[in-house]
Image (cartoon, rainbow, N blue to C red; front, side, top):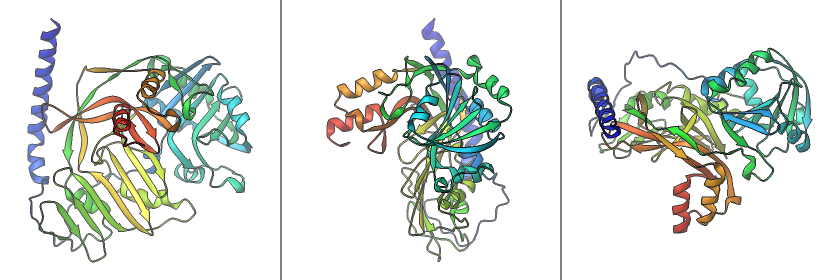
Length: 430
């Protein structure tokens, strides 16, 4: 009976894929580029792009609820996180005070609190601008970077805390905390998983205490036209020229260029950064234009990482980041000497395909122990989280499977746990 159900499920899934493929066929034919094509004038296209907002992209991605001193829970439920955050930013925040590591740890381990976590640190000045907040920050802390918001229901205080948990800024708050409390305490809706937090945890992260079962997703992918990227990225999109090669290779007289690799779909744009912002943290606003202009072409993007003038955005599915080869599932923007390099991929996840398949991942302790047993120095791990691995669908190239996988940030590079072990064995990750 089980085998029969699996066969029926596979037939239904395959039929659905074929129907979607049929509906997309004409669009695909229209947007697919011939091998050798020159572009001599700006495309006339009245299609409206729904511009992305920074407030849609720079959002927290994890919730940790401290139900009691000994019971911590976590959720990545996107709707819950966004609802909580949208209510929180409406609070009046005043009486700022710099807090040290001891004060942060005392609040962090107290009950009746919750944490909202960003994937990486963000300047508080940028956060203020994005959400138009009136925060009085001590002058010496105008460039303070944080990745964690801690809120205490009992004290009605909010802490903006750095990733190392050594420094923070505390504000007293006034607002509708009861409506947030209802959201946080709804354990059934939030699909919480138990976690633990101790001084011994690597990189100060929460550990999942139990193995966790997660859905595997399948998605139809759309191959975005080269015009999607030329219109989004080029400052001057008139008089573009194309070299007669198999790959897309566009350029103009202003020194801008766009290449798309035919085999992998990798997209690379090089141009001069058009700066419109002021202040020390203008990199975030200046580079966001490339995300903004793409609209929803690459799906749901979230701010994920930044280092030394490079900012990375990733697709998020069901609250978890997507990792793929050939820049799939992400958008990278690198700035150096007023020149900008934008990297992404033509393939973008679009339409979900129903699936009942699940994967069980090890608890954090078990995953880390497995790394240690295979020669990984876990003291070099800066972060660890669950993500979705972009895998080729075995039934059709027009679909991909997103498989739950453990990822660790090792020496500032993200690896799946299996990939890190293999690289260590080959001597590559060291």
